[in-house]
Image 1 (tube, helix red, strand yellow):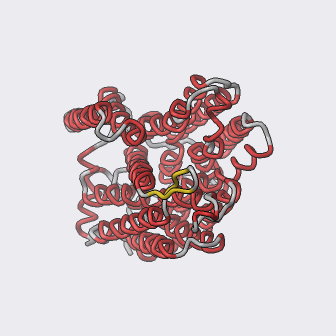
Image 2 (cartoon, rainbow, N blue to C red):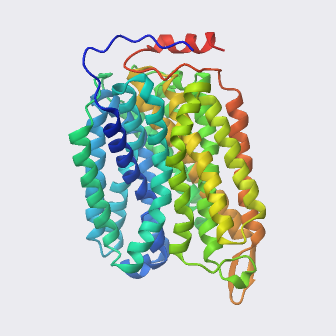
Image 3 (tube, rainbow, N blue to C red):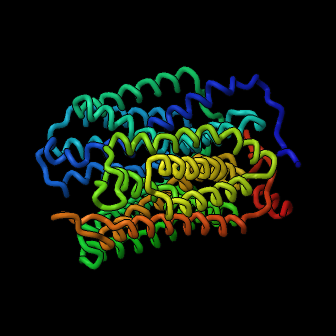
Length: 490
């Protein structure tokens, strides 16, 4: 195994353990925002005096804000400092939490949730900080832990939020998230040093605005299409706007000197295929969130429902998040020994097995926990490998933007999963008294699609270059060095 060419450090490296722990904690806090309101969604119309369609924006606003913030914060981090942008992201999270905690109507709630969504860039920024300041031998393990924090926060958020919502005033959800954000900010200030690597230049406002328009116009019909109707004028019109905006964005990014996302770097085989795998893997990862809570909470009279509570469904999902973190050291060792490609392939296989078992075994709580553990283990392996693949293929000055774009691809996959699973569950139904609920076969189809998505990610990963060298760190590779090294190592 050849080691990357690096200059000997002139100063003593900062202690690795506290930095990794603080960055992972900040990532978990940010990812908690995605599932924070799920336990109270049925009660939000009563709490806020609004219709269910209006209160659904409490989820949609976070999704849209995150999609816009992730690539923007990544690029700003490369330009002005990744730690600085992390602190700004946390400040927005705290501000949004306080606004939501003080809300009693729908408009402030939507504004607050949008501000919370702007913190979604914390995880890719944290991964980029790791590349810039940690010694190479510690990097793969740190990246695996940070990558897993995305799933850990989402999985642990459900039971934590359910407990708070059930035994306390619902506003406490947001006061608690504000406190967590403040703790994360203090720890980042005290423990995490600023990255020394900067790109400089001007911010690509045209690229940021056109990408924001394209993403919002894409995600709005994806999240609202089942309510509006997939052939509705709004749905089709927004999809057309999204297509045009993406074309304009791509045209501009290829012509500007300092693009928001360097599409030439993104077109390199390793980056392109990793991002493609991230989309389909994001679909696979999120599918369990669409299936497990409903199967657990549906009444036993359906013949397959387990008659549990939201709290129980959250507790069933929690082991998935825990195993993601526990599997990180193994994933790191595998990446160091065999390369991140192998780790991602193994993660895809494990996730496919988990969903394959789930197609036939969702009849008891222990079976659901077992499936969640299998899927969580595979997701932890994959989410630790993806940033390693990205960072080993881009120059150090672009890690923030590249990692953020990869995170965005995963988010698009989860959005597609939500939309497609929603359509399946809405159209494959059964009647239970006066209610219409999804049939058991509907959940099996969603699980089978998730298994196929994991297999698709595996197939895409097979075509990645055979690259085993450690992740480049501290300016070891330039933009011109990366691709030749990939080619020569195949």
